[in-house]
Every structure is written in structure tokens, then in C-alpha cells.
Length: 145
Image (cartoon, rainbow, N blue to C red; front, side):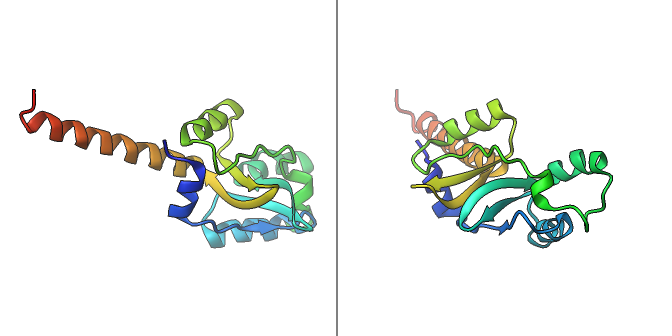
């Protein structure tokens, strides 16, 4: 079974983050620059939230403030669901589905070591399925009975 840690070793463990006092405009700029959908909110080396395009789209209307005048802490999701590197990709998908989230920070001993997105998880599962299909096709075509 593929673990979250194995996925991070393959994809890399770049961590893009911003402080909670940054403006939403700064966060959106970073999301666009890095071509990502969510960014971790870290204060004093501690994960305090996650901010996504979805948070902005759903929340900014209620605040009636511009992205330049509202702080990330006002829109971020502060109840962050996390996962450990030892968990399987299947457990990761189950958690994402149950919690209706698209990004999971990976924590090892309380330290953020990466982020797994729903795209990472789906890509891994598809790759595993393709490998299994290839093995079955090789078995069938080898004439072994």
C-alpha cells in the first residue's frame, strides 16, 4: 500500500505558507504565482489554518471588504484536518471525502512536512490501478493457466 510519505517523496514536499496577518490579496497573489489552490497559514512555525480559493470565493461577499483590507485570519479555515506520513493513500482519500476537503497538510511529530491534494491522491490511485491492469494483462497474455 502506498503511504502519504511515499507520495511526498515522489512529488516533493514544497510548503507554501503565509502568516495569518497577511492580506487576502497577498495570499491570492501567492496562490496565483505558485498555481495552487490552497496555502497553509503558519504563525511562529505553527500551523494555524489553511486558506483556499474556495474560502475567498465563499467568504468575501459576507465581509464586504476588499482583498487588500481583509486579513487571511478572517477567512481561513482554522480547524485544519491533517494526516501523518504513515497513513495510506486510501486513508487519505477517505478522510478527504468524509471531510469534504481538497488539501491535507502532512504532519510528522507536529511539524508540517508537506501537503497532499486531492489531485495527488487521485493521480496515485490511477497509477496503482494502471499497474495492476498491466500485470493482469501480462498474466493473461502469457498463456499461464
